[in-house]
Structures are given as structure tokens and as C-alpha cells.
Image 1 (cartoon, rainbow, N blue to C red):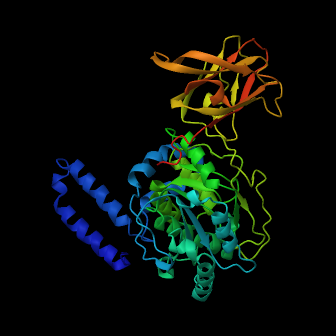
Image 2 (image 1 turned 60 degrees about the horizontal axis):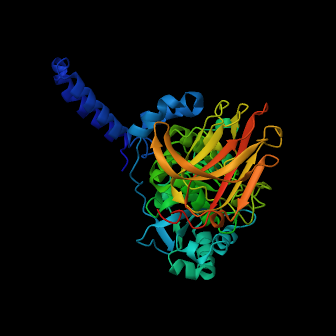
Length: 491
């Protein structure tokens, strides 16, 4: 519902008239009055301009976007006053398929428009399904938003999608939708930020709204949401790899996990954050491209750093851009077609008594994020320990130290141990019994068939320094594989 200008003026007059009569009560009732005024203005502004956003917050958050260094002071504003938990009121057209009542594990969202050259949507959908096992297909739903206003093009494409993927549509794994044009805000007279040409501004502004309506639709379909573009190739069993990463980060805070370094490809969210993200894109739809807005969204929700995993699970395959058919040869050089060897890394706490350099803390060695632990020269007896949230069977352990540009910052003398019988101490949970699996050689160690070599479920993995060294220590990656899924297929 949008209020016309005369209606707004009338409401303001009606509001201020009784307030004049209440002036002599202002000292006695200042706080209730201010509370009423704030609540009224928040709800009143909700319907101003584009009908979707709180204008006061729009200005304040606009300042944040222009001055990201000061964004911390606005985090609570965005979280509390703009806690958009409800979906946007849009009546969608169902072009193919209908949502199933059971929530899936993952929704994969694609938005597509007519291109002047090439069309990769069908190949992208095919790659998603072909690269997934039967068990994985049970846990995903793909939503395609045909966001072009050319209804003839949409109808022809829907017929083609229905013909090629009929069994996935029947099984509830594929939905095709459209948000009608009348729900879109004005795409004329937009701000020309960054000196972009007018048609470029219109293209990227509409794209923000396209994505917002897609996110809004997908809010209640699954526990997690993955955004892809419509010209992408997937790695084999990408869902299994995603689940491993999500499981390994249980108990840690994140807003967006990235599985590709390109554009709006391979960005993962909790579905509970989709309403806020949809409102956010609508709030600033004409300000900047969507991938820039995502950086600000992440920062406003207090995830300061990028959390990107390697290898990338998705590759850009389009040759022609959806904007004017321009050439776009971007490729993700971290992409691997077969990424099934991603470690499980069960949820755990990490501790070390090695002096940590700056913010290169212990946790950065225990994920596939492109980061590492970096400590000052360790001494004999120093340790780096991983304590699992619950005991588990480990089949393989691989630890690498040093980097290509710092090849001397390796562990020159060390041992790998696994432990059991954990107890609570003042320093936290610790294992009381350890068995040595092997010694580091050339700064690395890899042990296979661990579950066959020991007769207990492992509660701790520990690296022990066996001789002091003058060089600093980088632990680049700690990779652990389990003998069975560690609750990774459960929500």
C-alpha cells in the first residue's frame, strides 16, 4: 500500500492538530510522547517514496555505504530498527512447478533476462542437476526468476525448460517464477553514480530488484540459500562439499560464505537472512551494483571479513554478458570440476600456546578459507591442539606448514598426536591420553587409515613442537576426513 502526496499531508495535519493541544503536558509526558512519535514516523516512512523502506534509515545507511569505515556504529541501527523479518508483498506468477510443503536443505536461486547474444540458462540448470547425486537432489530446490518484461520470450523459454526438465518440475526440484512489472519501482530518472551511462544504471538497478524479488520468494523454501548467475557450471557433488563446510563452521557466526570469487556466483546465506537482504537490495537498488551492495550488507551484519573457500565450486561459463551482449571472459582460476576431496573438519575448538602474530589466529588454519595461522618462533614443547565438540572417527589427517612466499616458516621438528579421555580444566577441555601418529617431514605430514591404526574415537588432535626453531611458524591448512558424515546431512 502506498500513500499519495495529499494523503501524506492530511495525515501530518491530523497528527499535529491534537499535538498542539497537548503542549502544556510536554514536561510531564515527554518520554511517552517521544516514543509515540518515533513509532509513528517509522511506520509512516515505511510507505514513503518506493513503498518498501524506512526513509530515515535509508539516509543513514546511505551514509554508511559512502563511509564504510564508520559502519560499526550503524550495525545496531540496521539490526534493530530495520529487522525486516517479513517478506515483501508480491503476487508472483508461477510459470512452472509449485513449492513443496517440506523445507529442503538448500535453495539455489537464478535470475535470468533476455540476452542480445547467447543464452546459458538451460546449460546452468542442467549442470546443477547433472552434477548432483540422487541423494543430493532430494535436498535441493532450484528457483528460476525470469525477470524480463518480454512475456513472449518468457513463455517460449518456459516451454523449453518444461520440455527438458519435466521430471524435476514434477518432483518439486525446479520452480520457474516471475514478479510482475507493476511491482517494480521506477527505473527512470535514476541516480547516475560513478558516472555510469543511463542504460547501465537502469540495467544494474533493475538487476538489484530482480534479485530482491527472487530472495523474497525463496525465504521459506529451505534452511540455506545459494545465489548463482544464469551462466554457471557446477563442480561434481557441490552440495556435499557445501555441507562439509557448513558443518565445520557450526557454532561460528557468519552472514555470507563464498564459493566463487566472481560476481554474484556461489554466495551462501542462511534463509532467515533473506528478508533483510531483499529489503536491503530494494532500499539501495539505484545506488550501486548488487555485488558491491552485498559487501555492505555483510559488514552491517558484523561479518567484517570475506569467508571464501577453495577450491571454488562454481565456474562462470558465459561468453557474452547479459548487459548489451558485451564480451565477458572472466574465469575463476580456483575452480575444480571435482571438489569431493574437501575435508570434513568436524566442529571443534582450537588452542595454542605459541605467540600469535597479529590476527593470524589458530582458527584460520582449520578451514578451506584462504588464510593461515602465523606464530612467532616456537619452543620445544609448544603445542597446537584441536578439541572436537564430540568424539569422532577420523580416517585421514593432512597438515601443511609454510607458504610459497615464506618457505622457511615451516615446522622443522614436530609430531602429530591424537587423544582421548577429555576432561574439563580451568584452561578448558583437554585430553589426558595421546598417541603419536608420526613426525613432520619437510614441514608437512599426512596419515591415512587413522581409524584402523587406533582403537578409539578421537577427541583431540595435537601438533607438538619437538625442537625449538628460530623461524616463525605458519600452519597453512589442517585437513581432517571422517569415516562417516558428522551430522552434515542434518539441519
